[in-house]
Length: 87
Image 1 (tube, rainbow, N blue to C red):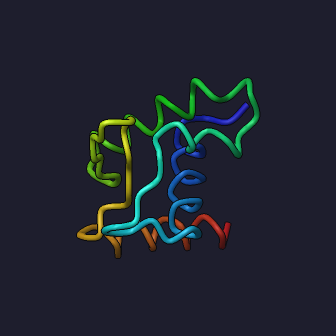
Image 2: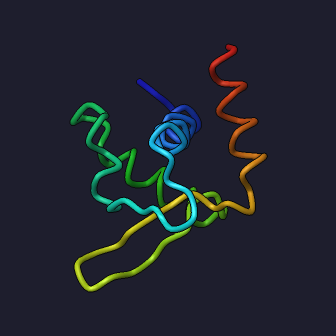
């Protein structure tokens, strides 16, 4: 079973790969789509923690919560994702 740290890294790498920076957003509900069904609750909790930590920015809309990566922390995010690929 994956721990929260691994899930956070996978979420960040997914958002980096799909280039969700600045004005490009995705729905909060779409984050859990690439994960197994038994981890979906853990993924949602990890994403909420990333929002609290400031790695992910949220944008409330009339049709739900949209998120994107925090471009002010781009170097930190890219370093974390790069280190995870090396390991």
